[in-house]
Image 1 (cartoon, rainbow, N blue to C red):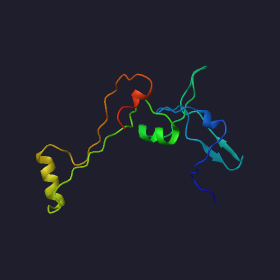
Image 2 (image 1 turned 120 degrees about the horizontal axis):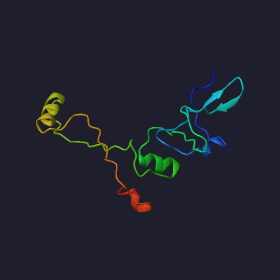
Image 3 (image 1 turned 135 degrees about the vertical axis):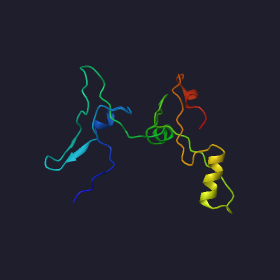
Image 4 (image 1 turned 180 degrees about the vertical axis):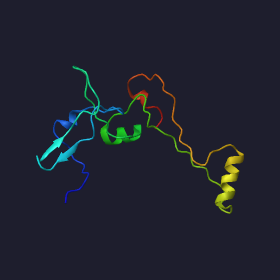
Length: 125
């Protein structure tokens, strides 16, 4: 039996650029034909770029694994850890957070902004 997912560098497929709304379906290996298959998942007009989504990655992940980041990335998030006294129960901690208007599970996304090109577009890492 073959694994359902493997990580590899595939010639030609690695030339597809990333877009979080990629026009290609995730590549898969056809065991009968012994070929890696990349199919379009959305209609693409003649002369338009065909992109592949590398996954719902944050900019730090794109930079670390692929060497680039996006000016506007809908998958960027900010995690805030709040330290509460250890002597309180979980229920008491949640009440304290609610009293201060802090949700217990938060996902913050920055608003879209116009950012210039170059290293300054990375912001503070």
